[in-house]
Every structure is written in C-alpha cells, then in structure tokens.
Amino acid sequence: MKKTITANDIMTQTQAFYPRLRVDNLWAGRAALTAREINRTQDPPLDRLWMIAKCLLNERTNRLLACDIAARRLSWLRIRYKSVEAIRRARLYIAGEAKLGS
Image 1 (cartoon, rainbow, N blue to C red):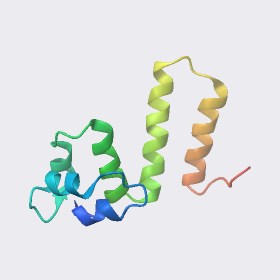
Image 2: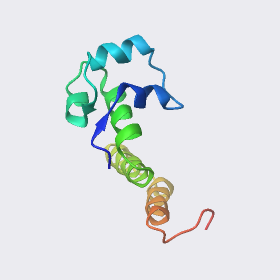
Image 3: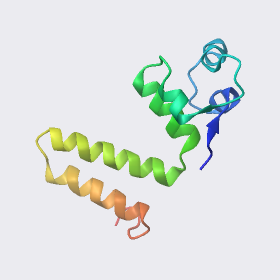
C-alpha cells in the first residue's frame, strides 16, 4: 500500500472533481500527504475518505471497505435478507470463492 498521496495523484484520478487550485491549497506546498494528514484537513469527511480510498487503498481493500460500510448501514436500518445476502456474496467474490452471477 502506498504511504502518501501527492497533488498529482488526486488530479490524475478519472473521477477527480477537485479544481487544481483547491488541491494545491490543500497540499499547501507539501510534496505529499499521509492518510492521517488528509484526515486532519478541513475537507468534508466524504471527500477525505474518497481521497484516501482512491489513492492509498488497492481495489480489493476498497471493495471490502464498501462491504463493511454497507453492512454497518444495514445494521442501523431494518435488515432485508436480500441486502445481507448481497453483501455476503460480494465478500465471497472478493475472497475468490464466488463468481459473478453465481
């Protein structure tokens, strides 16, 4: 896992919605930021999470994070079997124990 994020890392992401000036201001002349430094910025929490997930975590870890977030959200709501089953199957797929559509 990569330890730091540069301003260029953010700008090269296909879903980057940050203007270059905003990114440069966030980095404030520093070459790179760690996840901890990004988390301490004044950016909205979802923006900070996006930056960390998109630039520091690999695809497998991002998928597991998505499953964990979905499972936690379901615990706050009325749980529906199909939703819980979908998360379980996604985790199996990530682990290589299930195929798409099976």
